[in-house]
Length: 609
Image (cartoon, rainbow, N blue to C red; front, side, top):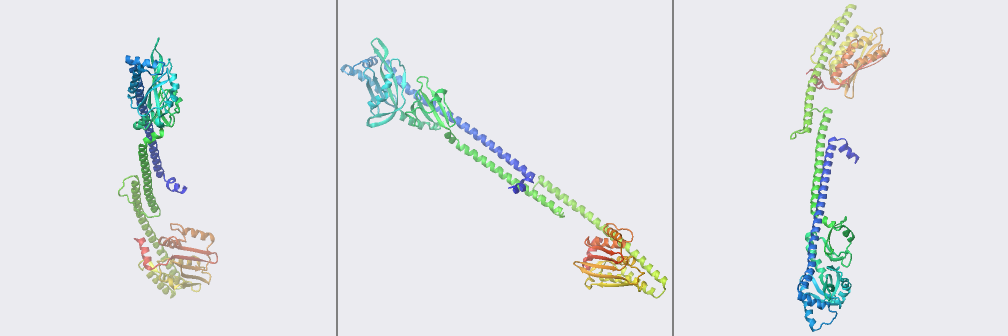
């Protein structure tokens, strides 16, 4: 992981910059999508809360109609004077028997109950409870009510509706038995019936009127109707919190969970898991409560949430891909530029970066690098040609320095010999000198090793004639090197320096040995004498002069001339080396490449061109 970080990010500023922008885009997408989801959730919860509130209001209105039905029937009872008088007399009569004169009044009660039961499809039973005798006058619509079971559930309630009770009362839903042991959840809306009882006109409660409603039927209808309100759960509760109607059918016979909080708020109570809305009836004090689980609300905006998540994920993936592709493309272009710079560092100034089809900052850098390489190539070409011409001029200058010096020394030898003896040797020496001249004036700067050694042999012969008996010349040349080529007049300055400074002519046994051999890919020619040698300090000074770029002045100019010529032509691996020891002798070693005449000519002419 650390290697990947170092390779892709730590040493690459623009990769880090692109990655930073990509992360910023991803963070922005995350924040925007989170905000959208949060707003969608709040909007869905608010919409659900409004739906629950509308459902509660609608159910409250429908239940109020049930209450109004009972009110209307009571009003009808009191509006008809004849009906009211006859029914009141029957209900107030303490005798349970129905004589002939009471039958007609009983018929009025039955008509009244039939009319009341028919006012609403949700009514199961209409009944009147006669307080004086405990009799029940009953009219059932579908199934016949089991009076014994009914009395068990409601007798206490009937008795509680005393003379002081006015208005209506609603019972909680309970399981009521009908004939054939059929069970139904019903609730009752009841009212006191006040009659003319002697002097207490309409002050005494003589009977209780009750309408029994089918709670299951109302709940089933609510379930299908509440689909349009997010399938909210609706319950109608008594003022004590017991269930009258429950759309889920799960809370009958129990107190509604959380009723205390609802009663305290008088509006509704919400927790973290549910939306709760409630309304309280001002007349009877019953509650209509609507609730909806938040998990169900989340399901309602699931499609929107999935759409947002899909779009956010697609945008994030696109940002990652674009960031990755941008980093790869940018890194690739930077690698191309770094590769070009590496090529230029290694001396390949002909390398160019292709910039066709792009016109951005990286292309401008590549174009400038190409332009720099082109200008550098042009500059090097011009400087290199100037250096070649300068080297050629130095070669010619070195050659011109050598020839007059050589001629001067040769003539001096002839003069001394002629002055000393005036013998026939002078003619021989002049002939030898002529051969030297003929060799010197031959065209070209390249000769074979054999030709150069022949030239030196003539030169040494002049000295051996003069110092006959005191100087011996010994050639030890490997025949395999004679065909190789070399620049003209490399050996003569070394020979001259040896004869002038290395030989002690006062001694009779001076020996100069010229040996030649091939070492690896080089030709080595050594000139060795047994003369006086060179002091250590002087030898160090000569070696230092050989390594200078400019020709030195003084006695060592001949050796330096040869050394510089070899270095200019063949490089630093070749040149002149000197080994010497005082009173023992000096050895000068010349090293140059073993190449043919054609190769040597091309090399030398490249400096002259």
